Amino acid sequence: GQQLNQSPQSMFIQEGEDVSMNCTSSSIFNTWLWYKQDPGEGPVLLIALYKAGELTSNGRLTAQFGITRKDSFLNISASIPSDVGIYFCAGYGGSQGNLIFGKGTKLSVKP
Amino acid sequence: DGGITQSPKYLFRKEGQNVTLSCEQNLNHDAMYWYRQDPGQGLRLIYYSQIVNDFQKGDIAEGYSVSREKKESFPLTVTSAQKNPTAFYLCASSPPGGISNQPQHFGDGTRLSIL
Image 1 (cartoon, chains in turn yellow, cyan):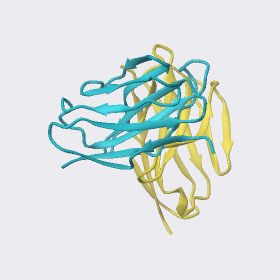
Image 2: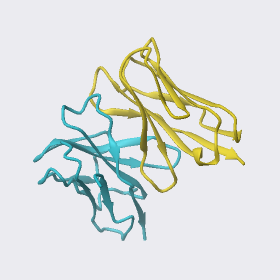
Image 3: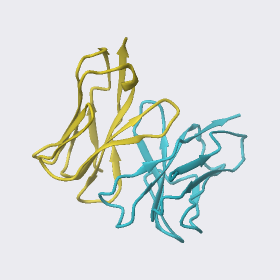
């Protein structure tokens, strides 16, 4: 079945640094979604991307839908302590209707 | 406030016992979903429902059952046949217009443990 490879698995950064994470797929995706999950809570939608090449921002977050439709990245600028959590990419492929999730990137920030 | 409510937050199951996790939404969403999350893993789909009185198996449906008698409610039963039920369970819903391409919105989860 379709799989998403999300990297890195975890990262430690200094407060104020920029962060970048990405997801790649073995097949074409029609929609990319980025979620953030805090401990003990459900994922919260950050950004939704619907078109190849689309670049969308939400505050300090920016995500892009790759031109090949097989990848997406999420950037966080000027990280702060509340950015800590697990970030998931997810996408809808062309061959099936179910949402496919990456395994997450765990972000830790040193104050 | 519109949203998805899961209850209870924590649940304990004894050997041989069935337990039911509740999921209610007031977003007027047609589609609802149940996922299982294990540490260090992505979300795995258990069951989903696109419309009242209809539901489909996901990738890991064995040992689970669901019902969809009302649009607002999609309870999940973890049966005694599920031998490794300890996990974080997440319920989600998505807007009308079909399940493909619509962002899913999640509840705050139920953590199930074995006694």
